[in-house]
Amino acid sequence: MPDTFGNKDPVDEQAAIIGFLSQPGSYGLRKGQVERVETHCSIVFLAGDRAYKLKRSLRYASLDYTTPELRQAACEAELVLNRRTAPELYLDVWAIRRDGAGRLVFDGTGPALDHVVVMRRFDQTALFDHMAEHGLLTADLMRALGQAVARLHGLARTTPQHGGSLAMRRVIADNDRELARVASALDHAGVDTLSRRAHAELDAVTDLLDRRRQNGKVRQCHGDLRLANICLHNGRPTLFDCIEFSEEIGCIDVLYDLAFLLMDLQLRDRGDLANLVFNAYLDAAPETEGLRVLPLFLALRAATRAYALAGGAGRRKDPGQAARLMASARRHIAAGIEFLAPQGPILVALGGGTAGERDAMAATLAARLPPVPGARLLPIEDVPAVCAVLTAGCSVLAVGAFERAQPRKPAAGLASRLGMPSAGLWLGSPPAGLDHLFWHPVGTAQAAEDLLAALAGAQVAPGVADPT
Image (tube, rainbow, N blue to C red):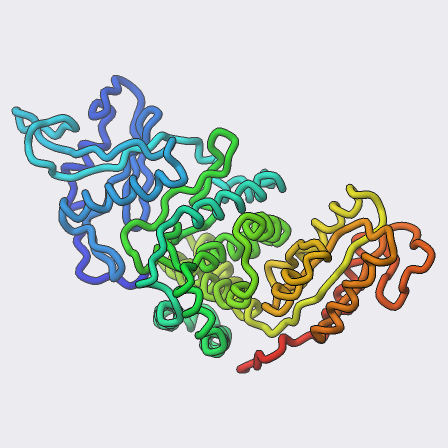
């Protein structure tokens, strides 16, 4: 979150409202208690089977909630935008007024003093960050999540007045400013390296970013697409709590939106899940040339998260919690640098074995191929798509039976034509006539990974200089 200015103390500004929302009787409950969850910008009151979200009376560089009218507008925008993905969770906006006796009520006749977003309450264990920590995120859920993000982006309105290279330059400037405040606690060298690489990468993709904006790839997205803002509702991944207070933050390149989720999974050491989301998204919303900007987007998301974590560490009174948050911030800086490390794509064909054996190995190998978030799964017969994805700097994993000799030839030829490394992996006994210069028999996933690691070892992406 950008730095604050002119903040009012929400406890003083909204003391009576907060007191009212803290009482079970305000919701017609005779027993039980109201639980309270506080964030930087809101206070959520949990009562019965509902959640009531109050915007704090404060102002940041990117938002202004300092008047009842501004908070009402924010509540109404939150309801509309989040109903795109979570209509069963976002129910209404309620006004808080006074009745004839001067008491605060939800259904009074006096002027509106404040507003709350009314939501259906759900179990916090259904949040995807909690599920990730407990190993509950499955391959099927990740594919469904990728499709859900693609649906949101497909329906979202285009916003060509935002995005493009200028918007990314502002993101880098914001990251540089915020990281400078915590650089000594993080690691000056790492912060400086990340900034230099981000600036160099932005210069390299400026024209592409501006073309994407002109071609409708900048839309009113989610804006804060982390696992903490996704839950399992009625068996489906459900996106909620999108950015409503700032079009600059919410109206972004669709791949910049997706990058936050991919980065979050990567930093939780679940690159396998990130690759599943990545491929499911692209199956529903194909991208080719745009994949060239994904390393920059991942790095910027990591940098933004790093300063948020470092700032959170500074506010913790528990030394252990502070140390854990700071360690995570350092990991995000290191990851951001790694996302921008020059790595060339690889074309890999996987054949032989049974369909089940190929699929199982593909799920393991796709996430291991550089660069993050791993390989795009494509049929080798779709030559234009394979070439476009490889040219954009993303590896391709082509999976098939390759039973006849003719379909086994295109992979090596494509890679040779593009000047890229390639390899064929064959499960089980190789057939007669197999080209052993390209195809390599492998019996285990580890053997396949070792072969690909050797192939990727000295690859540098063409045209990308390392600014360090």
